[in-house]
Picture 1 (cartoon, rainbow, N blue to C red):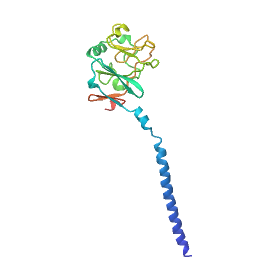
Picture 2 (picture 1 turned 180 degrees about the vertical axis):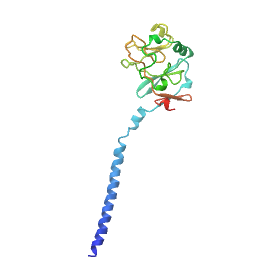
Picture 3 (picture 1 turned 135 degrees about the horizontal axis):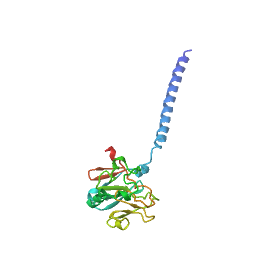
Picture 4 (picture 1 turned 90 degrees about the vertical axis):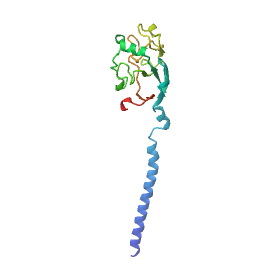
Length: 196
């Protein structure tokens, strides 16, 4: 009878040791399994914000920046372009007040931008996804009275320097304004300026 308490002690030790080893093994399997649910580094980079120093841009200059696999057009609008937007050609536009949600709330203004001097648009036509051409100074050949804008040569859609679509073209809505913000002279595309 003296061996019964000794067996209970061994049994308890073996039960606890087995539970600890099983718990460590389960954690060893669960951690990589749960980690596999996270996006890969490549996927994170594809959706990551992109930075560009706008201080080197000349008035009227367009730069194309790739973000999430799409071209983003950034134009430093000249005083003349800003005056053209302010004087208005709203009667020629389908959605002059940008009622369709194609821009973040903070860019829901006549310039469709956080900073009026810089236009930031996804350079993909809202008709069939073509890339509109930038037409500085000679856009009035396409739309009378408007000197600057974007023309999509594939199907003839036309957009002003705020990315707003003109009447009588196939594109149904304005160009998309991506989330963006400025930190000094750095433009960050993919970061919501409303959070700044």
